[in-house]
Amino acid sequence: MNNLRLGKKMTYKNKLALLALCSALFAAGTAMAKPGNADKGKEVYDKRCTWCHGAEGDGAGAAQDYLNPPPRDFTSGNYKIKTSSFEDMTPNDDDIFRMIRDGMPGTAMPGWSDLLSEQEMWDLAAYLKSFAGFDKPPEKQVDYGTQVKSSAESIEKGKKLFEDGDRCVECHGKSGKGSASKRLKGGGGERTWPRNLTKPWTFIGSSDPKDIYTRISTGIAGTEMPSFADPKSKNVLSVEERWHVANYVESLAKTGMTVNAENTVIKADKVEGELPATTDDKRWNESVPTAFYLVPQIIGEERYFKPSNDTIIVRAMYNDKMVALLMEWDDRTKSIPGDESAEKIADEPIAEDGVAVQLPVVIPTEMRKPYFGMGDESHPVNIWHWKSGTKSEPEAANLLNSLGFKAIEKRDAAAVGLKTVSSYSDGTWKVLMYRPLTTQAADKDIQFAEGKFIPVAFAAWDGSNNSEKGSKHTMTTWYWLLLKPATGSRPLVAALAIMVLFAGGLLWWARSAGRAAGRQH
Ligand code: HEC
Ligand code: HEC
Image 1 (cartoon, protein in one colour):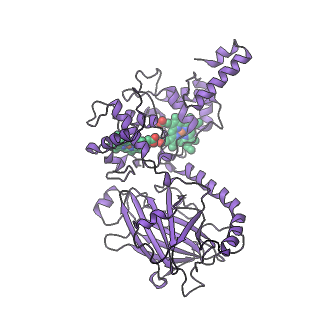
Image 2 (spheres, protein in one colour):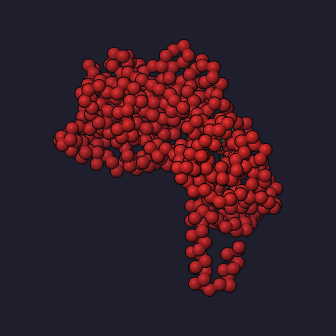
Image 3 (cartoon, rainbow, N blue to C red):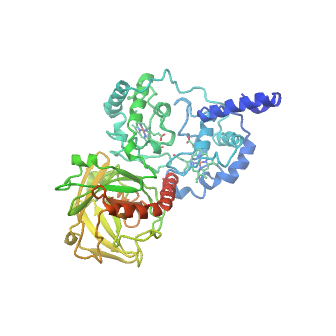
């Protein structure tokens, strides 16, 4: 169907109707292929795409060495997100168009719909195909049969198929978090990690069940993710079975992990008696979780790496003596240097996993710009840093005071009563940190108080990924910790007034961090 040519003979009213129809179809995601002009596509390509994909389309652009996954080598003919059958390498024009329009979340590939016209994107699709010599449309398409609607029963069937014979578990782990049991490689020999299926916002080809069904049917070209429609696969699945598995994968989404940019405050409830002593204490379920994006640390020396930790969830509680913070984040690998099985799947050299909490030594009372990095001369910070330990050294809680990157003082964690408890299970770390509300050294340690908005920031290390260590880590911006006082007390009202003053700036900040997160991993 060629709308442009048809349009010439049509009345204005008809054209409008057709336009409306087409945009409705686009909105629904069913792009109708328009013929593209490869020569015109080359002009746009040379201007917009060569930086990453290279002038020859071979993926060897200037940015190549900095990106993981690397920019696609179009001469390889590998297209990850396609709706043509696994038997046919050629993608549909719609498939290429869609990736150009929407981009691929969690990778450097941006969506271009704001910058390029639709026609330019079809022209690009035509030009890209020429790199691999694709001159005919694909002969076979994915067979969708009849879509099985999601239901408890279908999800249950899907779960069984997911786990049977290690079908998906082998790479994605039992709970789908991608807790790795083997090293995986991409087409260019680069290290890759299986997707964490509980985080659908990281899917490069959308988490709609139909898209998941398509990925299971075609596999993901240039990666180890195989096709389960291929009868030669020992784990082949029928059409109906693939719908069950797609429904199951969709059900894995952990919505509690989703970052809500408006939630900038970790609210700690006051409890009577002892605080929970373990990471799995049932009482944590009553504590409201707050999720934050982790973005690569960009201030220190180690600038460019592909982080594997992308979000962290925090809960907090306190009693009349102590405050407790529970940090939870997905990490595919438990990184213990010296441990043989941990080293086998880690990038070399393996380092320890870790998490850190940063708090100002003095809780600010007046409004001023929060400070980035690790404090500065007039704004010292406490850093509580937990490390997962090595085979010969146990895990440890470290206490640091910092006036910036170059002025870090190591202190005695036990002396101020800083304690940690950790657990790792099936791709998730939980680390609990406690400290007494007050200490002997008010000039060196934060003195916690009810009803105040206390700035807090977090950092995390995945020691199996790119040897994250020292200043090479992920971090959040500053958020707030609030020890909720008993209802009706006045301090909260005062604190709320300060909070409102801060809030505008912070919301903007949190949102830009979220956008940065989308761009950078
Ligand atoms: C900042 C770097 C960057 C720029 C600029 C860029 N891309 Fe990409 N592109 C990537 C990366 C990285 C991937 C691979 C993502 C992956 O493998 O998951 C990719 C993948 C693709 C794919 C593969 C889709 C698939 O299904 O496998 C297409 C098509 C594509 N890019 C088209 C373009 C076009 C057209 C342009 C210019 C308008 C462009 N890209 C500009 C980084 C970039
Ligand atoms: C041999 C390893 C392996 C097996 C087995 C495997 N996968 Fe994957 N899967 C991967 C890898 C690697 C990726 C990430 C590919 C990439 O880098 O783009 C992935 C990605 C995915 C994605 C993300 C798609 C997207 O749009 O980002 C889904 C969904 C998925 N797999 C589902 C499954 C299901 C369901 C099964 C079992 C029927 C399965 N996988 C079996 C390795 C595997």
